[in-house]
Image (cartoon, rainbow, N blue to C red):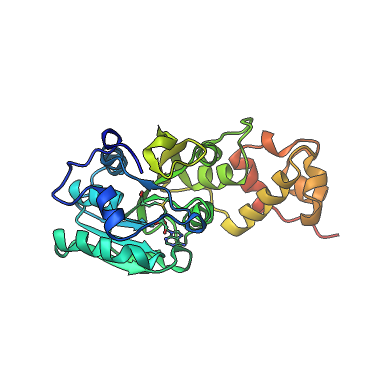
Amino acid sequence: MTDDSAEKTAIDGLPPLRAVIEKHGLATKKALGQNFLLDLNLTGRIARAAGDLGACTVIEVGPGPGGLTRALLMHGAKKVIVIERDARCLPALAEIGAYYPGRLDIIEGDALKTDFAALAGGEPVKIVANLPYNVGTQLLVNWLEANPWPPYYQSLTLMFQREVAERIVAAPGDGAYGRLGVLAGWRTVARIQFDVPPQAFWPPPKVTSSVIHIEPRAEPISVDGKRLSLVTQHAFGQRRKMLRQSLKPLGGQALLDAAGIDGARRAETLSIEEFCRLANARPAAG
Ligand code: SAM
Protein backbone atom coordinates (compact mmCIF):
# COMPACT_ATOMS: atom_id res chain seq x y z
CA MET A 1 0.00 0.00 0.00
CA THR A 2 2.84 2.36 0.85
CA ASP A 3 6.42 1.86 1.80
CA ASP A 4 7.28 1.95 5.51
CA SER A 5 9.30 5.16 5.29
CA ALA A 6 6.25 7.12 4.09
CA GLU A 7 4.24 6.25 7.19
CA LYS A 8 5.09 8.05 10.43
CA THR A 9 3.42 5.93 13.09
CA ALA A 10 4.89 6.61 16.49
CA ILE A 11 2.53 9.25 17.84
CA ASP A 12 0.54 7.11 20.24
CA GLY A 13 0.38 3.53 21.48
CA LEU A 14 -2.16 2.49 18.85
CA PRO A 15 -1.18 0.32 15.86
CA PRO A 16 0.06 1.92 12.62
CA LEU A 17 -2.80 3.02 10.36
CA ARG A 18 -1.78 0.59 7.67
CA ALA A 19 -2.23 -2.29 10.14
CA VAL A 20 -5.62 -0.86 11.21
CA ILE A 21 -6.76 -0.69 7.59
CA GLU A 22 -5.65 -4.28 6.96
CA LYS A 23 -7.12 -5.64 10.21
CA HIS A 24 -10.54 -4.13 9.50
CA GLY A 25 -10.54 -4.75 5.73
CA LEU A 26 -10.93 -1.07 4.86
CA ALA A 27 -10.34 -1.27 1.11
CA THR A 28 -11.07 2.30 0.00
CA LYS A 29 -14.31 3.18 -1.77
CA LYS A 30 -14.20 5.90 -4.39
CA ALA A 31 -17.92 6.63 -4.08
CA LEU A 32 -17.33 7.72 -0.46
CA GLY A 33 -14.39 9.95 -1.38
CA GLN A 34 -12.04 7.73 0.60
CA ASN A 35 -8.44 8.90 0.39
CA PHE A 36 -6.95 8.07 3.77
CA LEU A 37 -4.11 10.10 5.28
CA LEU A 38 -1.47 7.69 6.54
CA ASP A 39 1.22 10.16 7.60
CA LEU A 40 0.58 10.93 11.27
CA ASN A 41 2.99 13.90 11.17
CA LEU A 42 0.60 15.47 8.70
CA THR A 43 -2.52 14.67 10.67
CA GLY A 44 -0.74 16.27 13.65
CA ARG A 45 -0.11 19.38 11.57
CA ILE A 46 -3.82 19.61 10.71
CA ALA A 47 -4.76 19.25 14.37
CA ARG A 48 -2.30 22.05 15.29
CA ALA A 49 -3.75 24.29 12.54
CA ALA A 50 -7.06 24.15 14.45
CA GLY A 51 -5.42 25.92 17.43
CA ASP A 52 -5.96 25.13 21.09
CA LEU A 53 -8.32 22.17 21.43
CA GLY A 54 -8.16 21.78 25.18
CA ALA A 55 -11.25 23.78 26.00
CA CYS A 56 -13.57 22.64 23.25
CA THR A 57 -15.33 19.80 21.54
CA VAL A 58 -14.05 18.92 18.08
CA ILE A 59 -16.49 17.60 15.48
CA GLU A 60 -14.78 15.61 12.75
CA VAL A 61 -16.56 14.61 9.55
CA GLY A 62 -15.46 11.35 7.92
CA PRO A 63 -12.84 9.93 10.31
CA GLY A 64 -12.32 6.78 8.20
CA PRO A 65 -9.70 4.63 9.95
CA GLY A 66 -9.07 7.48 12.40
CA GLY A 67 -5.68 9.01 11.56
CA LEU A 68 -6.86 12.59 12.08
CA THR A 69 -9.06 11.54 15.01
CA ARG A 70 -5.99 10.18 16.79
CA ALA A 71 -4.07 13.38 16.13
CA LEU A 72 -6.92 15.50 17.54
CA LEU A 73 -7.03 13.41 20.72
CA MET A 74 -3.24 13.39 21.00
CA HIS A 75 -3.24 17.19 20.71
CA GLY A 76 -5.48 17.46 23.72
CA ALA A 77 -9.01 17.80 22.33
CA LYS A 78 -11.28 17.69 25.36
CA LYS A 79 -13.78 15.63 23.37
CA VAL A 80 -14.04 14.53 19.73
CA ILE A 81 -17.33 13.67 18.02
CA VAL A 82 -16.91 11.85 14.71
CA ILE A 83 -19.54 11.31 12.02
CA GLU A 84 -18.77 8.48 9.60
CA ARG A 85 -21.00 7.10 6.88
CA ASP A 86 -19.05 3.89 6.26
CA ALA A 87 -20.03 1.32 8.91
CA ARG A 88 -16.88 -0.71 8.14
CA CYS A 89 -14.83 1.99 9.93
CA LEU A 90 -16.75 1.82 13.21
CA PRO A 91 -14.78 -1.05 14.87
CA ALA A 92 -11.47 0.72 14.13
CA LEU A 93 -12.88 3.92 15.65
CA ALA A 94 -14.16 2.01 18.68
CA GLU A 95 -10.57 0.89 19.37
CA ILE A 96 -9.48 4.54 19.45
CA GLY A 97 -12.39 5.31 21.79
CA ALA A 98 -11.23 2.55 24.14
CA TYR A 99 -7.70 3.98 24.14
CA TYR A 100 -9.04 7.46 25.08
CA PRO A 101 -11.90 6.58 27.47
CA GLY A 102 -14.78 9.05 27.56
CA ARG A 103 -13.27 11.38 24.96
CA LEU A 104 -14.56 9.99 21.67
CA ASP A 105 -18.21 9.85 20.54
CA ILE A 106 -18.80 7.89 17.34
CA ILE A 107 -21.83 8.58 15.18
CA GLU A 108 -22.66 6.46 12.16
CA GLY A 109 -24.41 8.74 9.70
CA ASP A 110 -24.44 11.14 6.79
CA ALA A 111 -22.83 14.50 7.62
CA LEU A 112 -25.14 16.21 5.11
CA LYS A 113 -28.11 15.20 7.24
CA THR A 114 -26.48 15.97 10.59
CA ASP A 115 -27.62 18.82 12.81
CA PHE A 116 -24.18 20.14 13.83
CA ALA A 117 -25.55 22.87 16.09
CA ALA A 118 -27.51 20.26 18.06
CA LEU A 119 -24.37 18.11 18.36
CA ALA A 120 -22.45 21.10 19.69
CA GLY A 121 -25.13 21.42 22.37
CA GLY A 122 -24.15 24.97 23.25
CA GLU A 123 -20.53 24.01 24.04
CA PRO A 124 -17.59 25.68 22.26
CA VAL A 125 -16.95 23.66 19.11
CA LYS A 126 -14.32 23.46 16.37
CA ILE A 127 -14.95 21.52 13.18
CA VAL A 128 -11.95 19.72 11.71
CA ALA A 129 -12.05 17.39 8.70
CA ASN A 130 -10.32 15.84 5.76
CA LEU A 131 -13.51 16.12 3.75
CA PRO A 132 -14.82 13.62 1.22
CA TYR A 133 -14.44 15.57 -2.03
CA ASN A 134 -17.98 14.74 -3.22
CA VAL A 135 -19.77 16.44 -0.30
CA GLY A 136 -17.12 18.90 0.94
CA THR A 137 -18.37 22.00 -0.87
CA GLN A 138 -22.00 21.43 0.15
CA LEU A 139 -20.97 20.97 3.80
CA LEU A 140 -18.98 24.21 3.69
CA VAL A 141 -21.93 26.12 2.20
CA ASN A 142 -24.19 24.73 4.96
CA TRP A 143 -21.70 25.88 7.63
CA LEU A 144 -21.41 29.33 6.00
CA GLU A 145 -25.20 29.71 5.86
CA ALA A 146 -25.64 28.82 9.55
CA ASN A 147 -28.12 30.87 11.53
CA PRO A 148 -27.94 32.62 13.92
CA TRP A 149 -24.55 34.31 13.37
CA PRO A 150 -21.94 34.28 14.92
CA PRO A 151 -22.45 30.53 14.52
CA TYR A 152 -22.23 27.63 16.97
CA TYR A 153 -18.64 26.88 15.83
CA GLN A 154 -15.44 28.76 16.63
CA SER A 155 -13.57 27.67 13.51
CA LEU A 156 -13.45 25.28 10.57
CA THR A 157 -10.16 23.58 9.73
CA LEU A 158 -10.72 21.66 6.52
CA MET A 159 -8.85 19.82 3.83
CA PHE A 160 -10.03 20.39 0.27
CA GLN A 161 -8.63 19.87 -3.19
CA ARG A 162 -6.27 22.83 -3.77
CA GLU A 163 -8.52 24.15 -6.54
CA VAL A 164 -11.51 24.35 -4.15
CA ALA A 165 -9.39 25.98 -1.41
CA GLU A 166 -8.35 28.64 -3.93
CA ARG A 167 -11.98 29.36 -4.74
CA ILE A 168 -12.76 29.78 -1.01
CA VAL A 169 -10.03 32.40 -0.42
CA ALA A 170 -10.37 34.13 -3.83
CA ALA A 171 -10.77 37.92 -4.00
CA PRO A 172 -12.38 40.09 -6.75
CA GLY A 173 -10.36 39.91 -9.95
CA ASP A 174 -8.93 36.44 -9.18
CA GLY A 175 -9.77 33.80 -11.77
CA ALA A 176 -11.07 31.57 -8.95
CA TYR A 177 -13.42 34.27 -7.54
CA GLY A 178 -17.04 33.05 -7.50
CA ARG A 179 -19.94 32.08 -5.28
CA LEU A 180 -17.77 30.23 -2.74
CA GLY A 181 -15.37 33.17 -2.35
CA VAL A 182 -18.24 35.63 -1.86
CA LEU A 183 -20.01 33.44 0.71
CA ALA A 184 -16.81 32.69 2.62
CA GLY A 185 -15.49 36.26 2.47
CA TRP A 186 -18.82 37.73 3.57
CA ARG A 187 -19.02 35.92 6.89
CA THR A 188 -15.54 34.59 7.58
CA VAL A 189 -11.82 35.10 7.29
CA ALA A 190 -10.37 32.11 5.43
CA ARG A 191 -6.68 31.32 4.96
CA ILE A 192 -4.87 28.47 3.23
CA GLN A 193 -2.44 27.01 5.80
CA PHE A 194 -0.42 24.48 3.80
CA ASP A 195 -0.56 22.08 0.87
CA VAL A 196 -0.60 18.30 1.10
CA PRO A 197 0.85 16.31 -1.81
CA PRO A 198 -1.03 13.34 -3.34
CA GLN A 199 1.56 10.85 -1.96
CA ALA A 200 0.42 11.59 1.61
CA PHE A 201 -2.83 9.70 0.93
CA TRP A 202 -3.90 6.16 0.22
CA PRO A 203 -4.83 5.88 -2.57
CA PRO A 204 -3.08 9.03 -3.88
CA PRO A 205 -5.63 11.42 -5.47
CA LYS A 206 -4.81 13.04 -8.82
CA VAL A 207 -4.45 16.54 -7.37
CA THR A 208 -2.75 18.45 -4.54
CA SER A 209 -4.86 19.19 -1.46
CA SER A 210 -4.78 22.20 0.89
CA VAL A 211 -5.69 22.72 4.51
CA ILE A 212 -7.72 25.84 5.07
CA HIS A 213 -8.57 27.53 8.38
CA ILE A 214 -11.75 29.58 8.58
CA GLU A 215 -12.90 31.85 11.42
CA PRO A 216 -16.30 33.55 11.62
CA ARG A 217 -16.45 37.36 11.45
CA ALA A 218 -18.22 38.78 14.48
CA GLU A 219 -20.30 41.27 12.48
CA PRO A 220 -20.62 40.50 8.78
CA ILE A 221 -22.82 42.72 6.56
CA SER A 222 -26.46 41.96 7.31
CA VAL A 223 -27.93 40.04 4.36
CA ASP A 224 -29.92 36.85 3.77
CA GLY A 225 -27.37 34.13 2.93
CA LYS A 226 -29.73 32.24 0.62
CA ARG A 227 -30.40 35.42 -1.37
CA LEU A 228 -26.66 36.20 -1.56
CA SER A 229 -26.07 32.67 -2.77
CA LEU A 230 -28.78 33.04 -5.43
CA VAL A 231 -27.45 36.39 -6.70
CA THR A 232 -23.86 35.10 -6.94
CA GLN A 233 -25.03 31.89 -8.59
CA HIS A 234 -26.72 33.88 -11.38
CA ALA A 235 -23.93 36.45 -11.68
CA PHE A 236 -21.16 33.87 -11.98
CA GLY A 237 -23.31 31.36 -13.91
CA GLN A 238 -22.56 33.48 -16.97
CA ARG A 239 -19.38 35.11 -15.74
CA ARG A 240 -18.32 36.53 -19.12
CA LYS A 241 -21.61 38.36 -19.61
CA MET A 242 -22.51 41.79 -18.30
CA LEU A 243 -24.48 41.74 -15.07
CA ARG A 244 -27.59 43.28 -16.66
CA GLN A 245 -27.73 40.09 -18.77
CA SER A 246 -26.72 37.43 -16.23
CA LEU A 247 -29.03 38.86 -13.54
CA LYS A 248 -32.09 39.12 -15.85
CA PRO A 249 -34.01 36.35 -13.99
CA LEU A 250 -33.70 38.43 -10.78
CA GLY A 251 -34.69 41.78 -12.29
CA GLY A 252 -31.65 42.64 -14.43
CA GLN A 253 -31.04 46.37 -14.87
CA ALA A 254 -33.79 47.34 -12.41
CA LEU A 255 -32.12 45.29 -9.66
CA LEU A 256 -28.72 46.78 -10.51
CA ASP A 257 -30.19 50.31 -10.43
CA ALA A 258 -31.68 49.64 -7.00
CA ALA A 259 -28.23 48.54 -5.79
CA GLY A 260 -26.45 51.44 -7.54
CA ILE A 261 -24.26 49.14 -9.63
CA ASP A 262 -23.37 49.65 -13.31
CA GLY A 263 -25.10 46.94 -15.38
CA ALA A 264 -22.18 46.79 -17.83
CA ARG A 265 -19.86 45.33 -15.19
CA ARG A 266 -19.00 41.64 -14.93
CA ALA A 267 -19.41 39.48 -11.82
CA GLU A 268 -15.68 39.04 -11.15
CA THR A 269 -15.23 42.83 -10.66
CA LEU A 270 -17.79 43.15 -7.85
CA SER A 271 -16.60 43.35 -4.26
CA ILE A 272 -18.29 41.27 -1.57
CA GLU A 273 -19.90 44.44 -0.22
CA GLU A 274 -21.41 45.11 -3.67
CA PHE A 275 -22.78 41.56 -3.86
CA CYS A 276 -24.39 42.13 -0.45
CA ARG A 277 -25.96 45.35 -1.78
CA LEU A 278 -27.37 43.41 -4.74
CA ALA A 279 -28.76 40.72 -2.43
CA ASN A 280 -30.43 43.37 -0.26
CA ALA A 281 -31.79 45.40 -3.24
CA ARG A 282 -35.31 45.10 -4.58
CA PRO A 283 -36.15 46.55 -8.02
CA ALA A 284 -38.46 49.59 -7.77
CA ALA A 285 -42.09 48.66 -8.49
CA GLY A 286 -43.45 49.97 -11.77
N1 SAM B 1 -10.34 11.40 8.02
C1 SAM B 1 -9.77 10.26 7.29
C2 SAM B 1 -8.35 10.58 6.90
O1 SAM B 1 -7.98 11.76 6.97
O2 SAM B 1 -7.65 9.67 6.51
C3 SAM B 1 -10.62 9.92 6.06
C4 SAM B 1 -10.84 11.03 5.08
S1 SAM B 1 -11.63 10.52 3.57
C5 SAM B 1 -11.09 11.82 2.49
C6 SAM B 1 -13.33 10.96 3.79
C7 SAM B 1 -14.13 10.14 4.79
O3 SAM B 1 -15.48 10.64 4.82
C8 SAM B 1 -14.25 8.65 4.49
O4 SAM B 1 -13.98 7.92 5.64
C9 SAM B 1 -15.72 8.46 4.05
O5 SAM B 1 -16.23 7.19 4.36
C10 SAM B 1 -16.40 9.55 4.85
N2 SAM B 1 -17.65 10.05 4.25
C11 SAM B 1 -17.98 10.15 2.94
N3 SAM B 1 -19.19 10.73 2.78
C12 SAM B 1 -19.63 11.01 4.04
C13 SAM B 1 -20.82 11.61 4.55
N4 SAM B 1 -21.79 12.06 3.74
N5 SAM B 1 -20.95 11.74 5.89
C14 SAM B 1 -19.98 11.30 6.73
N6 SAM B 1 -18.83 10.73 6.31
C15 SAM B 1 -18.67 10.58 4.98
